[in-house]
Amino acid sequence: MHRASVLSKRYASMQPLQKWPSDCLRENFCITYRSVAWPAAVKFTQDFMGTERVLYAMDYPYQHAVDEVNFLDDMALSPQDKKRFLQTNAQTLLKIAA
Image (cartoon, rainbow, N blue to C red; front, side, top):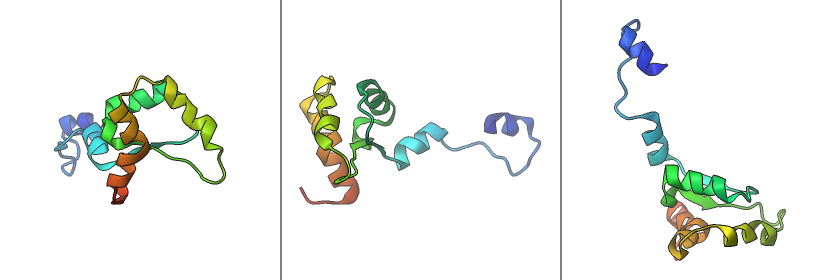
């Protein structure tokens, strides 16, 4: 819609974007997964956002984490990506010392 509006030159204030909206999303947001024990969804998000922008989350103590975390065993993640998902991405984002 934005591109079509720019090309139409109907609104002088509507100028071309400097970046694609998807690039702004990747650069400025992180995605957390909670209660989504579906490896395909996590993998898709990691592929789109980058493994450094996807984190695991839980509503402790209201969730039973064991069942939720077990789905990670079925995912094809490298040990490094699994550690990012479960630990280091949150440490980086929240500025928590390792």
